Image (cartoon, rainbow, N blue to C red):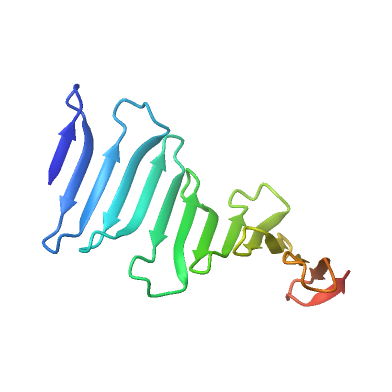
Length: 167
């Protein structure tokens, strides 16, 4: 274990290295000069970043989990939780550079419970779906690549996910 200290002898970094050379590197903000309290990075034995977890001063946390071994079609998943540790946003970036973002109404402050947004590999929204607190929902689709004979389709779904209206 290695520990660095600033001039006030408060720990600002800790690195723990395992026998296989994987390690956990934690940065602290002992002087409260940044918007984060800690940033913890874990790497595997080949020094590839596995996860980066950032705890912010307001209590929310962002954890990025990389597919460092490239064993799936997901490049990384980034999960944001609020200060009460409730999942707020999950962002999934795929190897083909497409993105799926799920926004949760973790505090039940809105009429919706989840909104899922899909972006193509150029960052254009091509689908968004939402679920309301009563279980009904919507699916909006855009022809982001301008390759179809339509530009926008909106569908409404019942609590069982069945489409009952489309325009």
